[in-house]
Every structure is written in structure tokens, then in C-alpha cells.
Length: 544
Ligand code: 16G
Ligand code: MG
Image (cartoon, rainbow, N blue to C red; front, side):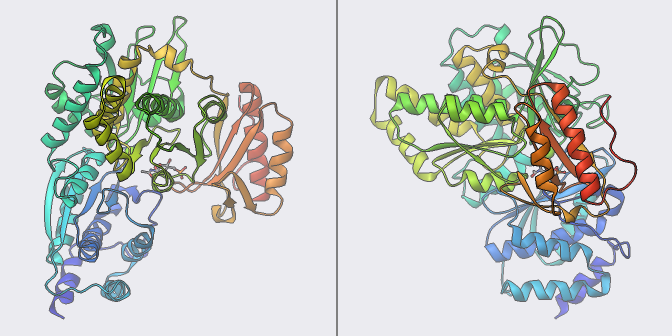
């Protein structure tokens, strides 16, 4: 077939470094930008085949999220705006790693396995990119891949990852989810936000102020673009807006979460509400500094608690019997889980790390609030739940209708396709305004247990196998028993280990009643990993 010949020729313009092997990680490929040209071309091919296969538009986002500016990566988006289905992650890895003379065989295999009919089939791929200097040329490589298979493409240029997810969903629902343009996105979210905050008439100008760290990335750009649509309902002071500093460098959600400190260079007044986006604006964390200058982080767990509490109260007021659940990972602070289960009486589920896993579990409920502690999350509403909310808006009156309208506006404000820093930020701001809550009051809902995250280098992290949503290890032999014994010695102790999906390390998490105890437990468990799972380099040292 002539087409394969053409694909093969075009692929030579995007040569694969011989021997280079990359893995489709938790959320796509990610490595130094210099090694990704061939991967991008091939993901263009893959997205085109996926589009034919699903008879829908597929998205390709060029970004390495919270990673350094020098890196890049790619995330693929399935028809309803969700992440690429795991079965196709395998094809993605095979394609990315095929040597030039084997590429066509791999493609043909895929076509055969998925029974893809290449004749008279339309394909369309949406492409977007973040602000990295390498992103423009890499997204061109994606577009080349699409063209090589005669697919159509639409280049959205600079957009946040969640914006591209939104576009894909809008188009595949023929506008049902909204208008597939950045203006459509800004209008939909702004209108919902303005409607929601009308329920907080006593909101002062001070309460409208928010400091936003844009991680020197795409989120800053897009938030600035959106500001006019908000019509003054939120007064954003944007810093790390990309005009001076480097992407994700000493700023951004990941920096703040990991360092448990504010971005470098920002001046926060005591009690002032601040938030940080990550490099592609699909994560957010909040924080403030208290009267003694102490830093307080409000992470994904605190966000999930605030949102689920708000939604649950509205359901009660509206008299709607919908099943609401919060989905977390093993990293969720033990205090948050306890608060949600014991005080809020909501169902809590634990999923494996990685947004796709949480998303999947959240889909089992009428309303599924999912957040990773690192600040990636959103809320999913079942079709039936949305219909019931709409019906109540139309048919009821008084307090019930008021609550139903707030629910309806919340649905419109939330980007259900994926975690979205801008959408999450607006929802949080609206909730705080409606509840008349300060950031301190929000923080005081529960107190985090002190915790620690460490890394251990081992010769092969795959020797660690986990179960129970990564909360227990099944191999190597003896490791779980060792962890159990160590945990027992610490009050409120909890610890687990898992191989990272994005770095060549084993991650160790520990929490306990005091920071000293959490640190000691983390160190002891690191040593157990080092000894039982083939540690390399020097033994882990106790924390200073
Ligand atoms: C990816 C995931 C993130 C997860 C992280 C874990 C998405 C969009 N991103 O960044 O959710 O927390 O990986 O990294 O799914 P780790 O496996 O190295 O700990
Ligand atoms: Mg991200």
C-alpha cells in the first residue's frame, strides 16, 4: 500500500535515536525535549488511528507538566476528554520504541489487532501545547504524523492541558459540553462563577482578592486572557506569570507541595489567600501564611473536603438523594480520610496513583469527587445526576430550587474531563464566598497528620509489586511485614512504598502523630526498602 511507503519516508524526517527506549508513564511520555521528535511524530500517527477507531476526535497535548523547562512530553486525550485508554498505552509504547525499519510492521499490527479500516475513514486530531521553548517544534512533529496518515488536524496552539481536554469533549458531544474554543471555555466558566458568587452578596472587595502563582507557564497566560470575562468577580494578582522567571523553577504547585513552602520571591501578607498552578495548569494547591509567618498548605485533600462538603450540603437542601463519594490515593493524609468518613459521613474510596485511576473509580458514583493530594482533581456527575439537578431547577421553588441552582452552576463551572487548575480555583473561590469562609477557617476543618515523602534508589524498581491500591506490597518477600512492624512503633503511624511511574525510584510515604516520628518512620521504611529491594548507592541517611 502506497500510504505505508509514504509514512515510512516521512518518519525518516523524524529519526528515532537508535536504541532509545521510552515508556508511556503514568500520564504519557516524558523526557528531555531533545529526545522526543520521533515520539511526537508517532503519537500523531497513533492519534489518527485512534480517531478512525473511535470515529471521534482525539487530542494530543505537548507538555511535560510540572517538570523542568528542558523536558517535554505528550498526553493523549480520548473522545470524552478522558485520558487515553490503557490498552492503547501499550501501542503507544510499541510505536515510540520501534526502530525505523520496524515501524510499519508495528503500525500494521495495530491496524489489524484493532480491526481499523483505513479506507474512506475520516480522522481528526486536536493538538495543543504548553509554553516550553521546545513545544512549538514538537507539536509540528505531531501534526506531521497526522498528515502522514491523511488525518485532519486542528492546532489550538498555546492552551492548558484541561482546555484541550475540554475542546475534545465539546466537539465530540457536538457542542453538548460547550463551545470548542478558548472563548467558549472562558464564557462557560465565567458565567457559572458569576452566577454562583451572586449567592454571596456580602462578599467584600478584600474577599475577592487572590494571589495566583502561574508557575511561569501556560496557566498564567490563560488566566490573564480570561480575566475580562470574570467582570471583576475575582481580583487576581498574578505572579510567576512567565514574564521573568523560568517555568516551574522555584514556583508552581509541585514546588510548593514538595517544599511545603511558598514560591520564591512572593510576598504574602498574613492570612492572604494564595494558590499555585503547575506547568500545564491541571493541578492547584492553596496556601497562606499565618500571623507568626508560618506557612500553611491546603492540598488536594483539603480541596476535596471543601468541595464534597459543599456539594453534600446542597444535596441535603435540595432533597436530592444522590450517592456522593470522594476518591483519594494512598497519599491522602490520614486526617482527611478520617474526617470525610467519620464526620462528613461520605463514602471514601482509594485508587492507585495517577489521574486515570481516580477518574475511573469516581465514575461509579452519582457524584464522584476525586483529588490527588498533589492537587490534581475534579468532580464527575453522572448523566442521571445532572438530569435530576436540572429537573429540580425547573420544577421546584424556594430553598430547594436555590440549592438546585447552585448545584447546576457548580456543574457548569467544573471541568469534568480532567483536573483543571483554573476551574478548580474558581469553584473553591465560589464556595469560600458562598460559605463566607476564610482560608484559615477552611484550613481548620481538620489538622493534617505530619508526613514525609522520601525516595530510595534500587537496581530495578519493578521488584516492588503492590496491592490494595498501593497501600500494601506483595513483593519482595518480607517487605510488608517489615513495614508493619515499623509502623506499629509510631503513634498514628502509616507508611507505604510504591515504584514511581515517572522516575526511576521507589517512593516512600510515612505519617505519624509528630513530625519527628513521621521522619523516623520514613527513614526506617527507606532502609527496609534499601535492604530488601536491592538498594543501590549509599544507605538512606536519617533526616537532619
Ligand atoms: C503523574 C500523574 C499524577 C501522579 C504522578 C505520580 C497524571 C495526569 N499525572 O504526574 O497524577 O501523581 O504521575 O508520579 O495522571 P510518580 O509515579 O512518580 O509518583
Ligand atoms: Mg500537570
